[in-house]
Length: 310
Picture 1 (cartoon, helix red, strand yellow):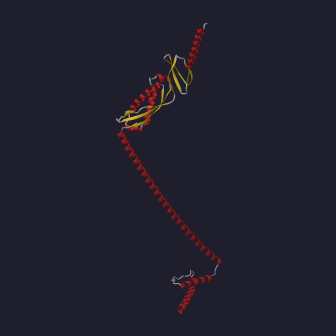
Picture 2 (spheres, one colour; picture 1 turned 45 degrees about the vertical axis):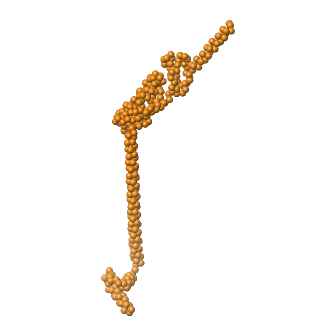
Picture 3 (cartoon, helix red, strand yellow; picture 1 turned 30 degrees about the vertical axis):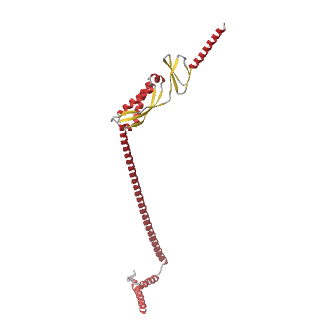
């Protein structure tokens, strides 16, 4: 075997070895987490590569699309929409979606994301065209829910799951914006006046309640004073009656004689004679009237003699 033949064999072997290594390298595909790759074999869908190490046939299998399963946010341009009452508005929407079926995503539509954008614009125009401007401004949640439902059902054929659609902004015409601003200002002033009136009302109620409480306390104090005064008078009368009762009891216990009682009567009559009293006390026992009258006469004579002497 000549040297030229050996060189040719070595070159061929080297080329085959390098080709084999290249083919082996090309046959190994590593797909990151949450990503996928759609593979075609000879121009026809073959399989979908998921995350991890995957093998394909070099030069026969071809990766035509690589994407991920992560949720995506599509912020579409503002759209001009006419409401039911012929008010022109500009609406800005955002769609939150994710790819669920790689095969349908690649083969279901030429451009699935563009299809979602067009469908969103069409659906939004249809929905807002059935509502008046005021309803459009106050029914965002309802509009968002309907948009989400319609887009989600339609996007199933494209291997896409629509999680939610949100209206970021609704811009009515400038004249309507000015009118709305004036209305909002009037509403704020109205609420401020109402709050001020309610505050004054609450303050008046509190003042009245305070005055009422003060009057009640004052009346209670006067009532307690009268009660205490009555109690004091009652106690005084009780003590006075107790004193009289004890005096009578002492007299009864002493068993005073009739002569002592007569002497006490004379002393009291003498005191009456010294004064200007005109009343005459008659003893209850008729038998003692004469003796009492004689005593009274003597006392009066004695008093007259004393006055004449002076």
